[in-house]
Length: 206
Length: 401
Image (cartoon, rainbow over all chains, first blue to last red):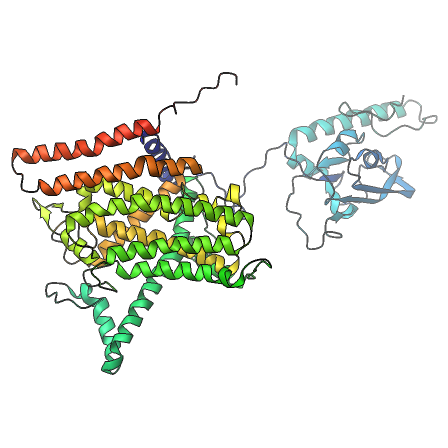
């Protein structure tokens, strides 16, 4: 009969109207600045740099300025300058470090390719999405100091991935120490970390 | 709002009239009638202006709740200051007039629209003693002033010199003229039954109760129920409300005849739409729902204008409910509904009303026969015409999908 469909539709809207007052499952809006939803662990937006120590963020950056991420970055938002000097990395080995490491978050497209290609687990994806700035040229261009986060921060964001990375680094360090111990005199130059399982390694060293 | 000799009414009932008489009493006698008229105009503007402001908020809140979201809730307590924030925004916006537009008509269209929709408020009886203009043909005046708003819509579309505006204005004319007919035809039985064209008279004709609890409202008769339904559907179309909001179909025509309007002029159009909705709902209350009459006897303490307001708000809530439910019609569906369904139904309804008033003396078992015949006259054509209207429109099957 004509009109029954209209009545059914009206019943549906009425049910939603009443339901939104007593059924929290229907009424899912989160009052954003005051309330926040828990982001899923896989959520990502912009990269950050991992440091080993909380006290000395700049001194213990895992990044060795190999510039693979800079070359791979599709929108070319990473800019790295190598340092002239070397200083000991997390393993105590002398390494180059990034004197300048800038990411233009206005350009970054959150593709995570920098993370995939990094052989040193030095760059990871962050979950901070409120990076609005009043000046898009300077405010969104994040320098080394603004990008560095301690390893504990990475653990808080992605506990499973971070534990795996720590395991891998620890085995690599143990292997390096075992290799270095028998013949300490004639140790050839070695990369500090063994090639990781997840990314293509630049060149597996013996 | 002339003072009637109502001795039985409470102080609350007479309060608005007493207040007006006290205010105009401060002036010398020759100026009193001007003061009276001005006070009535100011009262209507203030009441319906405020109602408009909060109806926009209520509509957004209700639509939000229907879609399971809270609606505006940031400005003030529960978003109660949202209308004022919107108003300030509208007032401070730039008023843009296109270079190719006709500046005089472009300016005149919103002014004429708001003026005509305000005129319609003058003949609605808001309470026992609250009626701004008493005239014998006030029902006729209401619809005359109401259909003049169509002129302003076309004026807006024509003067904007914009193809979308003009398209929308043509559509609006087609729609408004199509629905003017069932709207008026559904009112004729009321005039027939009440024997008067004055709104106060129509309300007076609906006073009293059968067996002490069923009010004599027109909606409780077979022809009245059908007429009320036809009136409300036509009122939806006349006030450009969803699902008949074709003139300003935003997905097809940008904003229709409002495309080239901004700032305060746009706000005036918006206001006129709500005024039109309020006026038509008020007329529906007056013609079919007993006007300011109380639904059950023994509620003399509640002033009559409170009953009117309650019924008005209920009808407006119905408008919002329909808007939250139904998608927009196509222009051919829209006109087909008017000409092939509502107009024939309204014409048949005229016969039903005539039958109903001719069989007024029937009593006893004949009363049952009277109801059965009248109901058959209402339901039969509805079923037959409804079958014709939806013929060939079965459930859609997707064979190759």
